[in-house]
Image 1: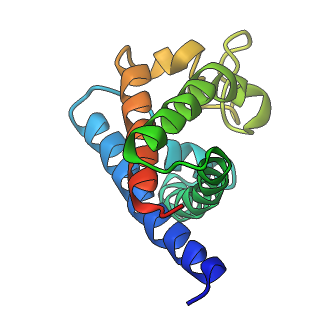
Image 2: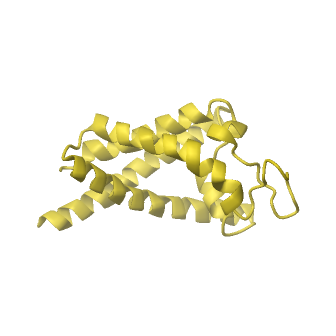
Length: 162
């Protein structure tokens, strides 16, 4: 098997495993009452207002996005020239910080169903905005998000052979 095929298989395999692990951490945190952040649901509601459809569609889309990010992580780790669990975890933690400080606070301006902190909910915008560090979804949300992202990165870093 050539290097490109091996790399693609690693990206698909470890991207799937890492995404499942990240989703498991996030769902467990919801069920324990530690956080209300549900990234697959937020992703799904960007395309449909039906909550049931949003959950299923969001899960599928989140899985695909997990693979796309696995490709990005592979490229980052290849550029660094070092793939270990701790380097992957560090990349994941940086990704989590970017998510919490830049991406999620912009959600009300990009997502058709997330309310604005300034204007509040409307008949169409019914989802609560995440706020700074996604604290509107619970005070443990930043820590859980960082742990989930670091776990994702650690799995990829441990699995990739660069």
